[in-house]
Structure formats: structure tokens, C-alpha cells
Image (tube, rainbow, N blue to C red):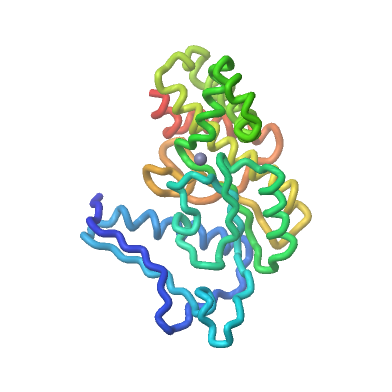
Length: 281
Ligand SMILES: [Zn+2]
């Protein structure tokens, strides 16, 4: 597979109106995000020397409407993502101005302010059809939680820093769950392996995204028919949002497991996935 020398991604208003989207349902919203990510990720896989992608904007998107009226806020999805500078949500999903209601915080943890932001989107934006929780591989916030978990003495430094601690502590349940799953799958001595920290970090990223999506579903949408919840992990290496599968990185957003039994099976499969096993080896 080739790799282009030039990749151009352009938001353009050129006098023509952007294509108006029909009203979406939640499945169509999810498919639109999956397709947008594939279009973005696929640019880097092209055999052509130069690749270009134009995202057409309307006049009102840029505040250029003839009547001067500001556009109404009309996102079809909200995304809770990490603050990591390598994971720009609109670009990763290939979407336009006014398509995504984006909440970003280190480790995509669901604190009060972030939950309040999602609550606003659900309650006040009539176009909303999908809530997405997106983690990413090699997340620094999750790695900090892993370090505190593997080295409790080192965690004492974090414990004295209340703002940082609030993030690390929110990630620790996923780290603990991923640790148990990795030991069950690969044996207690797996922790001695040089790749264990990396494997535990990415396994915790995945588990945390799925757990958070389950919390979001129970908190905001269980009583709603028109809004669904999905999760995914952005793989920094391939630029694709998906999750670790048995044999390869599986593309696309997915629904969170439900209940203890489904989560245990999910964690077991995650620990044995190709991505996590390769990090461990
Ligand atoms: Zn991160």
C-alpha cells in the first residue's frame, strides 16, 4: 500500500450552498461518522502522489449569510473525546462546521461539567441523534492511571494534586478491569513483560471507552428512542476509529456491552485481541 506525498483536506465555501442533509436517524448518524472517518483515514493509504478532500461549507456556516443571521446549532452527534492534540474530532470523523457537538477532556472522563454538556445537547438540540465516546491508543491520561496503579508509591505524588487526581481516579476502574482480564488471559507473570504497560494502557483505553458509553446510555438515553450511544477508539497508527478484534483492528463505532456478563466477555476478548497481544509480545 502506498503513501501520498501531499494530503490536502479543505473546508471550502465558494458561493455554492453546501448539500443539505436529510434528517437522520441514529443508525444513519453512526454510518455517517464511520464513513467520514474512513474517508479521512483512507487519504493516507492512497497510491496517488497527491490526494485532496474538500468539505463544502455553507455561507451561514462561516457567518456569511446575506441576512447576517447566525446559524442555528444543528449537530447530529455529540462526541466525548480526549483533549489529546493528535485527535481532532471533526477532522477524524471528516465532518463540517455545525455537525458535531464536541466535548474534549483528558482521558475522555465523564466529570460533572462534561456530563452537563452532554445533557444540554440531549435536552436542547433537536437534531441530536447519537452520543459517541471516543478514546484513543497511547492515551497519556490513561498511561498516568496505569503508572499509578502499577506503582502505588508513585501515585502518592498524584494524590496530592487534586485536579490531576480527579482524572486519574476516574480512569482507575478501567485499568483495574483491564489488568484482571490480561492476567486471566496471559497469566500472572504477564505483568513482568516489558510490553505490559503498553498493553495495559491500550486495553484500559478500550475498556474505559466502552464503560463510559454504558454510563452515558444509562444516564442520558435509556428513556429516549431517537438518540443512540456508541463508542470507539481512534488508533493513532492507522487513523481509524474502531476497536481491537481477534485478528485485526475492526473499523467502526459500536454499541457498549450491557451488564456484568457482557462486560466480562468483552474484557476477555479484548485481552486476547491481536492489538493487545502484539503490544504484550
Ligand atoms: Zn488521551
